[in-house]
Amino acid sequence: MASKRLTSHDVARHAGVSRATVSLVLNRSESVTIATETRERVLRAAAELGYKPNSAARMLVSGQSETIGLVLSDPSILLVDQFVTRVLYGIEKANRELGFHVLVEGLESGGRGGTYDNLVESRRIDGLIVVNPRADDEALIALIETDFPLVLIGSVRHPAEASVTFGTRGVLAQAVDHVVGLGHRRIGAITFAPRGFVAADARLRALDAGLRAHGLALEEDAIEDGAFSAESGYEAGLALLRRRPDLTAIFAGNDTLAIGLLSAARELNRSVPDDLSIVGFDDLPFARWLTPALTTIRTDGVRQGMIAAQMLFARLNRRPLDEPRVRLEPEFMPRASTAPAPHPARG
Image (cartoon, rainbow, N blue to C red; front, side, top):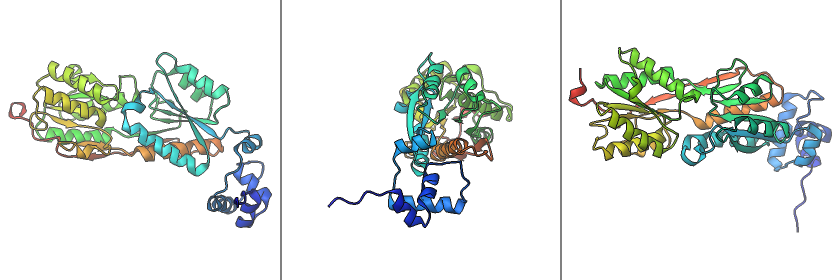
């Protein structure tokens, strides 16, 4: 015998409220003020019963599509960057709790503005999260200035933006102290993305500031641009080490690039960490299982994604954000891929 289909009547009885109250809560109506305790009781009752209201009916009542857009500044990162998948998991986890769907779009090269226009003007989405934005994305900046519900994972440094970022200056200063303390003086870097991405530029500035505190500098010919993937880390590592064979330590823009850099070092007969120390960024799950275990900087992508989604839901419900620009603090994780500099570099 088929089980009885759950209705809002069932939720009302379970919560001890009227069916009208259930409708107002589940449709996120703002026409009536409902006590927080009552709202939570209704949501708990619906969750316990496994009740899901009809999405088409909800859209008619609320005027919402029940969908948020997720825009990736470079869609190819889904193929190569495990950190982004952790961010997506955090967003999806928050969405499951609040009943929204996620529509993923990518910005193809040369066509940035059209993606935002298509999503917003078609009314397919109620709000938008943009991952790893570029500082020169004029269409994104224009959208921020319209006050459309939008949260950045990253930043374009616009005064009106809502964003979730990681602080880099303090933790990179710790990493530089560690590397310089091991005797390294000739230090290079591979960015995780082409310059122009705000986070990549910020990490370079923070690294340079850390070196300058020790009377050193990040020389331009000691920098190579990566492009998210291990392959780009390998190619950038070969180019950098061939151009600057005197380097004894390299900061990789993310852990995925660090894998490629390890391969490049092996190909050039540079032992890690005896001849070359490597520092990554993100502390992805594989980092401590590499050989040698990767010295890196731990970030929490799942938490970043969840916070971004929760901020967006607050904006959709017209609630003021306590903190429009959230900055999370990473943690330095020293491991076996860094060691004392080889003797010629000492002093």
